Length: 203
Image 1 (cartoon, rainbow, N blue to C red):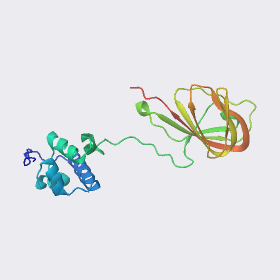
Image 2 (cartoon, rainbow, N blue to C red):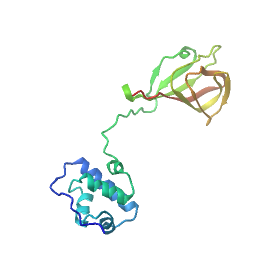
Image 3 (cartoon, rainbow, N blue to C red):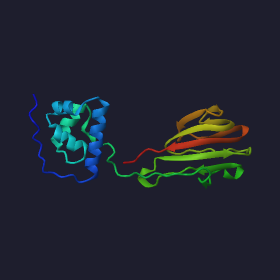
């Protein structure tokens, strides 16, 4: 039988950390259908102490966090979910993506950047590609990372290495960007597709 809670109570709440732990403990307890009294029995902590934790009125010791995590059958890290600092995000309203120059841009190929994070967090580059005119020579690309294409409008044959894929609205293609790739044949204009390149994260 667990002994009564003996967690030190001299700590006082310092703000966001207690709020996050309070929300997670209550959220997990309710999701598992465990009453406060049952959680007290499982952890050996008093109902009063648990109530303070769920109301962000006290700071938890590491031993208390460990007991809570074990009783709720989750890793201790689950009790800190949501504590991360704010992360960078880029919002690009419709029609406001920056136009970028690429080989082929002067032959009716428009590349519109839909937003990208900078520096070490740059892992994705989303482009909206619009092809409005046929060209005798189609540009071929090679770059690090993995590319994902999603066809929106029109019909084209897309080449990757020696392979050829007919792409219609709703079709998608994932491939290694190191292989030469690009439109091989524009079947039905105008053509629009989403191209997302994922780059490896370098530690």
